[in-house]
Image (cartoon, rainbow, N blue to C red; front, top):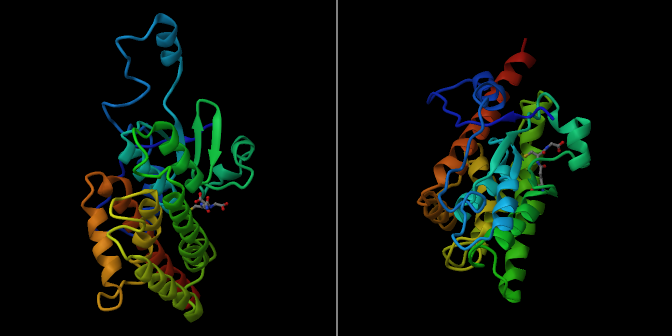
Length: 283
Ligand SMILES: N[C@@H](CCC(=O)N[C@@H](CS)C(=O)NCC(=O)O)C(=O)O
């Protein structure tokens, strides 16, 4: 497969739709970006390892994430990897040129979505499944995804809320604009977004989506909310809890790199695309 390796994307403060898409999808991603962390499980060698263990560890490579920084579910996985201190190799899947529809990719994920994880031959599609897998396999504890069944059930409910409500509603608003030349934001779709905001506002009874510390439910929900709020603003009088929660997550040391930059690029791309499509339609 010939997926592009990813490097840090840096864009000027003001950028056009073509700059955003070209930079994010094609231009600045020629090198592998490592999520550096000294606790990388694949590079650390225990002093007590026997020779066979050492050979096996050397033979293992970093898990590969097929990803695109604009994509919210990919960013949710990036946040999880950062929180775990896990070093992932990122390979960019360019949706615009159809990398996700090529036979090799379809073999890994017949549903042709990103992200996909390849952990030394173990293929896991779907962000929520990937996050659970990463925490279960690489977490030093279960704080990001509890093993306790009641808390885990609540986390699962929040992950399904993100997938079935937040992400689904965002996709129905964004995709016609980004991919099908629409310049409309139909009222029923924006109302559904506002209703989703309200549901999240009512869900936030603690500091985080489930409980008083960050979990993968927060990483999943923030990946979508941070992308949406640049297009459908969160009014402070209506959604004070969401805004306080966003600020709490923004304070995480890895948040900006793993999520914020991609979220801003995505919402800017949607707004710029909408303008461009409107201008074309008026010709
Ligand atoms: N529930 C999935 C959604 C993944 C998804 O729809 N990703 C989009 C990009 S944000 C995608 O791959 N679209 C291409 C396609 O559906 O063909 C997840 O969380 O991984």
